[in-house]
Image (cartoon, rainbow, N blue to C red; front, side, top):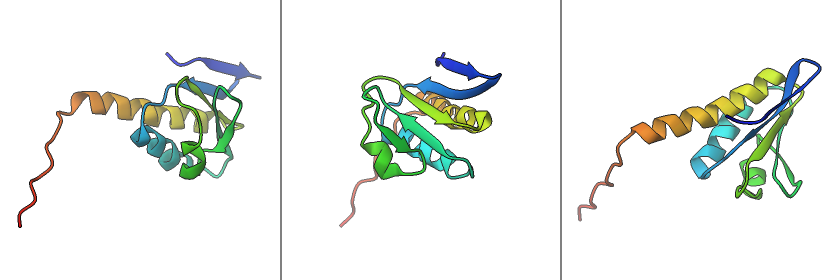
Length: 102
């Protein structure tokens, strides 16, 4: 279960473990749907805009990162997108790439 920090009754930040490019893409895909500012911070205190895939790729994902926003629902939805991707990835069988036909 991710660590959740509540401030004034609202969730403003949530820690989540990110493992790979697809999960970084999930963060960006969900974040761009929100008007609110959403940021992601790593353990080195580097902060990236969650709507910027290039910014997110510069972060350190060896430890959990923190999703931050003034909109509690946005934080929860971004983290939920990553968790949903992890769950569905665990259930899908690996598929072989089709062979090239020359």
